[in-house]
Image 1 (cartoon, rainbow, N blue to C red):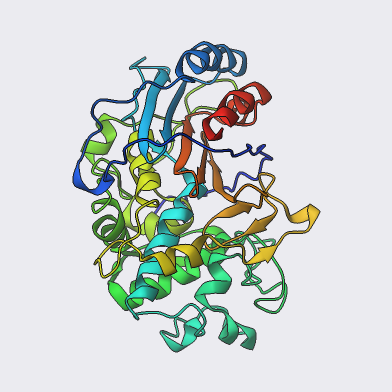
Image 2: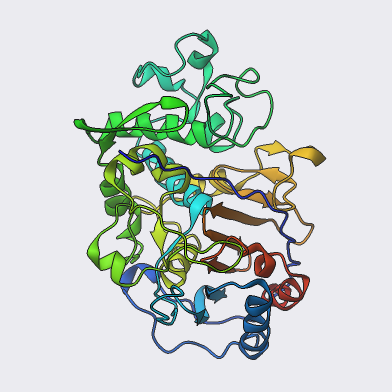
Length: 391
């Protein structure tokens, strides 16, 4: 099994002011599989002029963007190409690796398991399954789902030969962004809801052995498909490959990476494994605006509010993407006019950003297929335009 490493992108991304919006009719994103009759988006012309220029400056081959305004998709567009060899154009349905933005979808799935009573946010995970994770430190017995989702487990981001897996502080007492924490919680979810194939295994960072599981199938069935994210997935398929953007280095040159397997996803699905498009992720954003009671897939309002409320204030040196605090699966910027939740993502050849105002029912997602993607995502000119989405 070929090693596959997913790397957190922790670049600082400016956040945008939120103000009142005029009332518009809401659409139910769970009842349709494609967007029709897009509303006129006043920011479109400015972004269509600005984005290609920035992409050219940074040698970014492809980008896809979707804007949500007042509970519905207001505009989406692809720029550039899927890869420098085929030169096939990007469109809003092009599939990208969204890296750590995947954590927002996994967190939603965990919150639904909590709502169903299958797991509790505050019961130590070892009480659900003892998978032999960090047996040499008894503090592992303290880690809960809440700790993991808010990055307070004490585990580092990813282990390595030089940095073996360990707890850096008592669980719940501090903040440390952790892909390993999400891997641990994902492993518990798999024990509770799925199965592992012991005959299909691989070795990953720090020589950790991981065997294939059906976690991708579980997340597709319980989050992606109910939200109408019908083109998205975790394990690579030919259908995904037909619409997939490929990764590129800082010089805009194609990077060769292996396709995602069930074994890879047993390690990375929760932390960074989602393959999705701008349009599909927009469906997820829109679904956040419509909590439901007694629905098999959609969170009720209580759980939804628990997921997005700030759980820990961040010190200056801990801040990611300019966030002031962290919720469950989301970073948070606390603003007088209403909180904004967001998440960035980055792994070899891909950079992404999603940002949402639940109060205003607006947000956006931007996906790029280049290591230089942050040049667009962090650009002050892009920030200035997108800030008006929340006015």
